[in-house]
Amino acid sequence: MEKDVLESEIYHPGPVRDYFVERDGLRFAGTHLFLELWGARHLHDKNMIEKALCGAAERAGATVLHSYFHRFGSGGGVSGVVILAESHISIHTWPERMFAAVDVFMCGVCNPYDTIPALREVFRPDHLEIDEKKRGVLP
Figure (cartoon, rainbow, N blue to C red):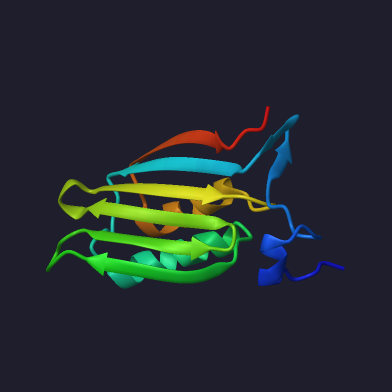
């Protein structure tokens, strides 16, 4: 049975949950995806973007802790972040260019690639570029 981590355990060694990932013979903090959505839609709709990112996080098996989004004026872009127990998802949009930059960083058992279908469904990009970096790879 998994035990909740108490604040006192952070400072005193004891049984704590390790969110590092072990995959393909590597041990690392997590996978960070850098997504570029070209020809994307709904990039000015703050509420739709927040719902899309939170839904994408849940599809990946992540736990949403908090979200914050800001819209830059009428018809302007949106910047926002979804804070996860397993890290974060952030977005910056340029509706006038039909472009969005999305970062998806997840540790633990979550799979950041599982966010992509949800993001495609909402933003319907004509073209999607994906770069990946494994963060905190241990020697």
